[in-house]
Length: 139
Image 1 (tube, rainbow, N blue to C red):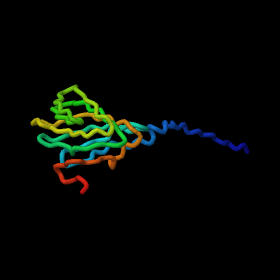
Image 2 (image 1 turned 90 degrees about the vertical axis):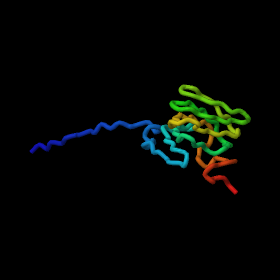
Image 3 (image 1 turned 90 degrees about the horizontal axis):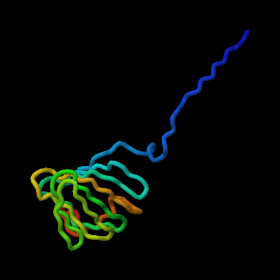
Image 4 (image 1 turned 180 degrees about the vertical axis):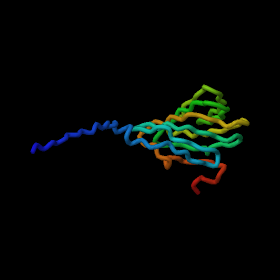
């Protein structure tokens, strides 16, 4: 009796670590609106930020990261250091590391922007709040 042995080989696709470790984007709600982390890798993070009309984020600073903001829709009032500017669709600005800054929506429609963070540490706990409309400053 001849025994028949079948070799079955399962073809699997190995994803690069950077892709395999990504999770589904989750939106985090804040009193001023919401943000969604779109992508994150070594030294960078990309967020979609939506600010409700008439709301603003805290006047804050980060020790370990800089930020680039690109307006997708709406109007942004940006305070960066001692400068204040208004940005509209397809306009952008840069916030250097260790610089006090604030983002505000002075308009009547939601402000949507893309934020690109660069730095060695990108955790949400690298926020020094100087002033906050929602009582989130350290005492």
